[in-house]
Every structure is written in structure tokens, then in C-alpha cells.
Image (cartoon, rainbow, N blue to C red):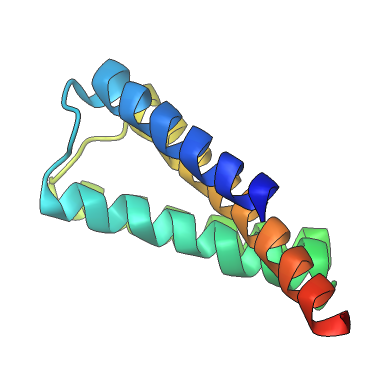
Length: 117
């Protein structure tokens, strides 16, 4: 539990500084927060829980599914002209996916350890 909590708090601190550096705002607007949350949950469930922990998906299929959803989201943003694709936004999305995957893996591992006791 301590590892899970420390990864979560460290991720929040890094996210704060990443938002300041890349987005020039500590707390982004609601629309941007929804996109970032979607990427976090995608990493959490698809990569962290389904792929890395339970091995329900192969790494290839998990990455393909993740890329398909993220590309569709970026294309929608481009079509609506909310955000133009740039390197900073892509880096933010990669961070959210990686943090979500790590949190998903650690959460699934922690839950399986508490179930076995």
C-alpha cells in the first residue's frame, strides 16, 4: 500500500510540474482534464491491469488498442480544432498513459495480495 500511495503522490507532483512546463497552467481547463483522465484510465485498465498484470491481452494487442483510441482522440481534437497536435501535448499524453499503466499494475498486484491473505 505504501508503494501504491507513493507512486500516486509522486505522479501527482510530477503531473503538476509537467502541466506548468508544458501547458503553462497548474490546473488545466475541464476539457483538457477529461482528455488527460481518459488517457490515465486507458493506461490503468488496458495496459496496467489487462495486459501487464492479468495477461488477458498481449502487449502487442494492448498497445494497438491504446494507440487506436489515442489516435482517434487526437484526430477528434484536430477536427474540432481544440488543440493542434504538438510535441508537448503528445508528451503529456504519454506521461498519463505510463502513469496510469504503473498505477493499474500496482493496484492489481496489491488487490491480489490482499485477497490471498
